[in-house]
Amino acid sequence: MNKLSTKHLLGIKNLTKQDIELILATADNFKEVINRPIKKVPSLRDITIANLFFENSTRTKLSFELAEKRLSADVINFSASGSSVKKGETLIDTVNNILAMKVDMVVMRHANAGAASFLAKHVNAKIINAGDGAHEHPTQALLDAYSIKQKLGTIKGKKVAIIGDILHSRVALSNIFCLQKLGAEVLVCGPTTLIPRYICALGVKVETNLRTALEWCDVANMLRIQIERQDIKYFPSLREYTMLYGVNKSLLDSIKKEIVIMHPGPINRGVEITSDVADSKQAIILEQVENGVAVRMAVLYLLAGRN
Ligand code: CP
Image 1 (cartoon, rainbow, N blue to C red):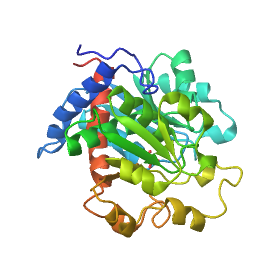
Image 2 (tube, rainbow, N blue to C red; image 1 turned 30 degrees about the horizontal axis):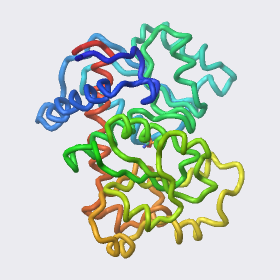
Image 3 (spheres, helix red, strand yellow; image 1 turned 90 degrees about the vertical axis):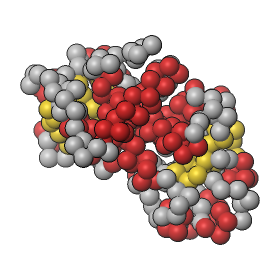
Image 4 (cartoon, rainbow, N blue to C red; image 1 turned 180 degrees about the vertical axis):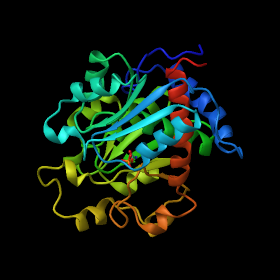
């Protein structure tokens, strides 16, 4: 099949293995494009895309905008801060006003889980979820899978540990769905208070000891503590969290194999990861960012039905 089974990209849960493989294979072509001297193709020159960011973002927002421009789409950007949302305008009214300007696709980040699915039911454009609360962040999982494949040659059979604040992480959930569909084994590691009870039902291993998790895995995906989503205290202090769950060079050096280190960003240096690890050859954090543009180009291109 060379077509996606879905009209929107709302989450990885709704994608088939074939959808994911098609996106990753298409991203290979766009990776070649963005490494050319002229990094642009005319594929979406008749398409207008609105990037609606109701929540802060650096990587996802810039990566989508660049991907759209590399595909020659017309792009409009909206941030909730400084908009009429501050005067009480609803999500549907905001989006319908933007769509009245003849927009074909909407990329949306929102603090509420389910916001992208809600929009897909109420408006006529194609919707891409750029992160909805603690629910899903599908393009992050796709670029993470692409980066693992690029580094290790395959995802099938690899062991991936997702370490940190699993409870508040949309990256964790999308990565679990994506990696399992592609045949990887997934383990989550963190303090018990930051691991949701439902996680065992997803078929992942659960580990509270960081060293055991690192000794098990081929890839460690480090997540930050999402203080902004925490309304109660889940651990005594950041210092104690770092002592038990922070990855540093001496810990990694004491593990008898080379693990690939990933991080979706933003990094809290010195908390979940030290700078000497984040900036080391073992880490592929900036490769993830580079691959994000190619993967998002692939998603936009396929959803526009251009293949
Ligand atoms: N990884 C990620 O989603 O980063 P931003 O919040 O900066 O977009």
